[in-house]
Image (cartoon, rainbow, N blue to C red; front, side):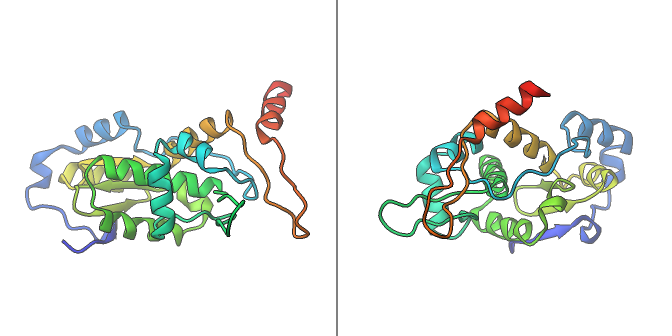
Length: 208
């Protein structure tokens, strides 16, 4: 099947979908999986970067995967690319979020071709919009849902074998990165603007 990311409104349902799973059962199953947009997220600084080891720990991937996906353009560092000896890639929060989604899609058997299309679709959206999306997949196609009713319809119709609530992944990444070091990129004059964001976030939590 051709790779695509389909809006739920464009997704056909099977002729016997209503007989397969009732709407109430579908809603219960979607709720148990945390797919119904219950997570509240907050905006994070977009100028904080994370190095490879931190990104791998937060996204649950290996450095080999991170390096390969950067070199092939699947998920490139949004803050700073490697540009010769002595420089390291710096990934932003959005990059880490997408990397964790990629890992989950791979783990559930979605093809890399399909994942590339899904990543481009996520890349085209604003950071604020991402938290309002649930991605559903039947292993061949990825469907985008932006409301609870759309999620329930897919579960009821059988297209959604599994789902990923982006807002929930956002919260997981936020929690992981709160315990890991980040830094600001180098200033234009080449001076180091690195700072220990881990210590700053811990002080903020203690003060709060």
